[in-house]
Image (tube, rainbow, N blue to C red; front, side, top):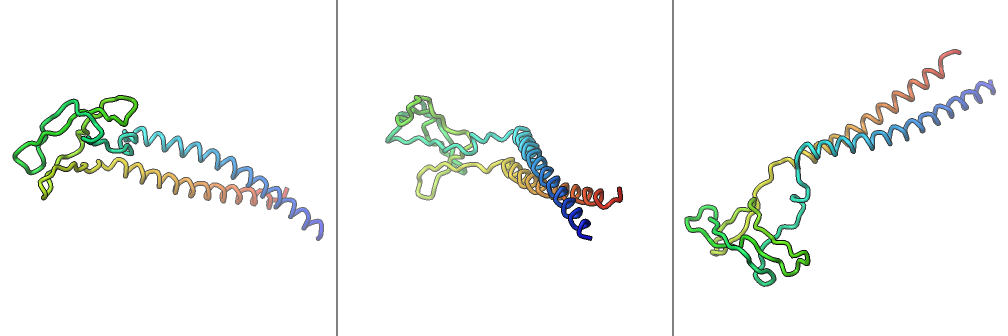
Length: 162
């Protein structure tokens, strides 16, 4: 009877060690696989993260030099307004020419001043975020499912008479 307990404990310890090694290997494979899948989805979506998370650049007459002006028609207005289209930012040491973003809409406020309004996004970033959440949740579920199945198979194999 005491020998049976020692054999059972050794078997349980061996199963626990095998499950632990399997869990580590599975976690590494899922991390690499899910990240590869995420990068594939990000690349396939065509979302430009540099453009989305970049700071918006506006002409500041106090610290910039205007190079080219253009006429823009504010939404709902008849008369166009003249705004700076290209400028040099004196605080930018690279010396690159800054340009007015075409995705921005020009609107005239109730006070008569001209403001810039960003257009609504196309939803691709939200779709990428939803896919990332689904990938993480699916990976967690898959890992738990595979570990449970592996543990059950090891236990069934240990219970079989030799």
